[in-house]
Image (tube, helix red, strand yellow):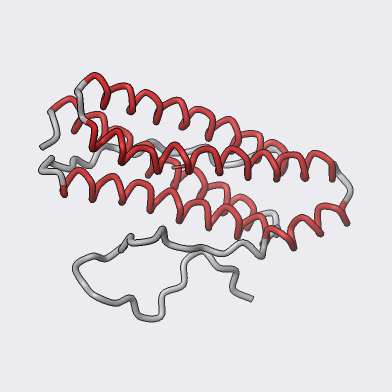
Length: 188
Ligand code: OFO
C-alpha cells in the first residue's frame, strides 16, 4: 500500500509525463507546420512514449492501492525558432525530468518503499536513453546548421523512428487485443 506522500508524488510525476507527451506533440505539430515530416514523426513517437510513461505510473498507483488523480496539464510552448531550438528544448527538458525521477526515488527511500524504488529504476534507465538519444539528434541538427540537404537527410532518418510498447505494458488493459493500432508511425 502506497503512503499518502508517495501517492501524491507519483500522481505529480504522472502529470509531468503527460505534460511531456503534450510538449512533444506540440513540437510534432510545429514540425508538421514547417513541412518536416520526419522530425514530426520523431516527436510524435516521443509523445507516444511519454504517454506510456504516464499511464505506466497511473497503473502502478492503482495496482498498489493508491488513488490516481488527474491534475491539470499545463499548455506547452507553441513554436520554436529552428530544429536546433526544438532539440535543445527536448534535451533540457529530459535533464529536468531525470532530476524529477531522482527526487521521486528520494521520496521512495524516505518512505521506506522498496517496491516503488524498484519500480522507478525503469524510469531512471529510460531517462539515460532519452538524454542520450535527444543529445544525438541535437548534435546532428547542430552540425546540419542551415544546410538544406543535411537537414533533409536528418528529416529522412528521423522519419524511420518507430514506436514500441514496453514489454508487458498494455495501453488498454481491460480488453485483450488492440485491433489495427499504429501509434506514431509516419504515414506516407
Ligand atoms: Fe518520460 O521520459 Fe522523457 O520525459
